[in-house]
Length: 162
Image (cartoon, rainbow, N blue to C red):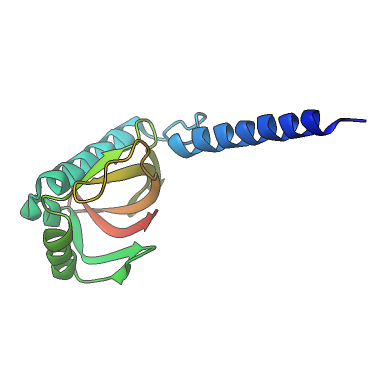
């Protein structure tokens, strides 16, 4: 029979193990991921850096150039936006000079979509300069649908989950 102190000690150690495992899985995607096409993977990772490089310095024309005219932006907290001009206006109002996106290193996975483009999945977090600094940022997940339009990559769908 286990005494109360041993039982509590076991529960604490077990709880810490669960927290440790959960925090590790939130910070990286599957370590078994291998891209189907290194060229496609490199192209989409480049486009991600172009998009969020523009986002982080509020280069709205460059950012808008990454979006297709028929963009759908699904945000778990903000809802659905389907108008490119509205997305740019919201970015200008709520993001510019306030928010920086940080990609979780090694988290991007890219999958080809035949005769269309690619799906990009990954993890990132945002630093808001108007909020108190925190040692740990909430990691969000994203799914981007990229369409190859006349040899130019454009985002057609964005799913952002925090």
